[in-house]
Image (cartoon, rainbow, N blue to C red; front, side, top):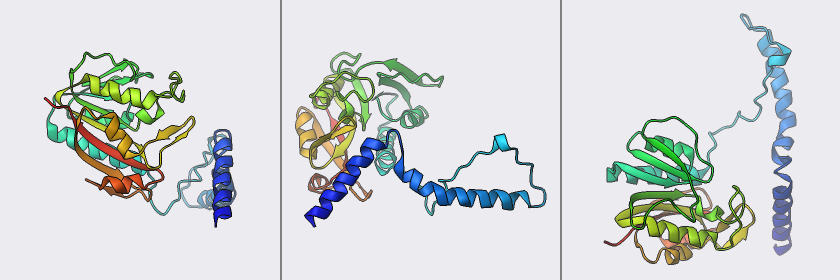
Length: 258
C-alpha cells in the first residue's frame, strides 16, 4: 500500500514538472475527441442548410463535451461566501487585495471597490478603482479600512509566482499587514488553502487553520467556513475537519476589536 502511494505521489510530481510546457492529461484525451470532431464536421457538412466550412476557419473545441459543468470549488464557493457577507453588511466602500477579478467586478454592483494588486487591473468600470500595490506594504494608514477582503492570495506571497519578491515569511507578513490597515470594528474576509502545512514551491503554501488563527491573533474570529478535499462547502465548519484536509480551503471572517 505504501509503495502504491509513493508511485502515485511520484507520478503527480512528474506531471507537475511537465504540465507547464505540456498538458499530458489533455493530450491523452485529445486523440479520441479529435476523431469525434472530424466525424461531427463531416456529418454537419452534409446537413441541409449547413454553412460552408472554410479550412482556415476551423476551430476545434474538443474538451467541452462533459457530463457536468466543471468548476473550481475553492474559488466558486469562496466568492459566493464573501459576496453574501459584504452585501449584508451594506458598506458603501470596500477594499480587495488581489482576489479574483470576477469577484471584484461583481462587487462593484453593490458598492464602490478599490482593488490592490502588484498587477493592476486595467478596466473602465463604474464604482471601481485599481491601484498597483504590494500586500506587504499596503497604501493605507493604520486602522483605516472598514471592509476588506483577500481571497486565495496570501498563500502565494513571497514565492515569486506573480512577480513578487521571494520571502519565506510572505504569508505571515501579509496577514499582519491586513490586520494593520483594518479599522476597529471593520470586517476582514480571508481565505487560503488549509490542511497539512507544507510548501508547494512555487505554487502556494498550505497552512493549518490553527496557523491562520495564530497569525490573526489580534482580531476577533466571527466565522470559519470551508471546502473539504471532496469539494464540499460547509458553512460554520468545525475547524478540526479542515485541519485533516490535504488541500482544503478555509474561509475566515475576522473583525478588529473596537
